[in-house]
Image 1: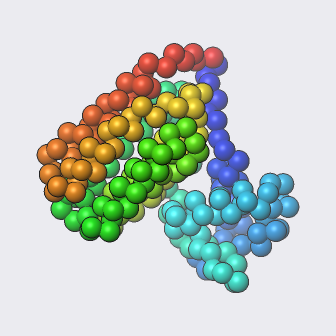
Image 2: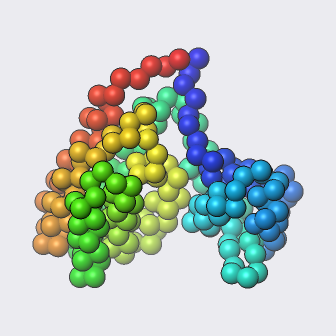
Length: 230
């Protein structure tokens, strides 16, 4: 038997919300049940429902309006992330690395051209958070924000949209314990300052070199974890 892929509660809730929309033939502009109703229907907390809806909104599947409710936005936009069915977690992570290397590598190169001083300052601030809290939960959030700032600095809305559509998959690197390892990617943090410095110096070649070193380290760490297919 193959190892079952772990899913977080909000991911399961997101899939159930999608199923509800599809099974009821809902279209753009149709209103979903209230947060409280969905919480009761799915028997999960309102927090998990909010996280699920935020993920679906990022993929432009639903739209949330303060004080008005949640509406179907674009039913055709529910893309890659929850449809991927790769039962071997190591294989999933390595395939995600290939996609991330291509997409984020391009974002890094574009950021060397277009990053504003404010965006560079933000990157440095997130690096300080990582440095000052090496073992705390803030580290993963700061790391995620660092990379998202690079995406933003690319100034390529199509590229950002594609990366957003893969957000649930990419969150594997920041919000879970892949392969049962809580700190699988922590020793890659030293590469981050070199990437930020290259972006600040507008050095596209060095930025690409440092980013690829980061991805090489991540892939090597994944390969080094002994896993079994059961």
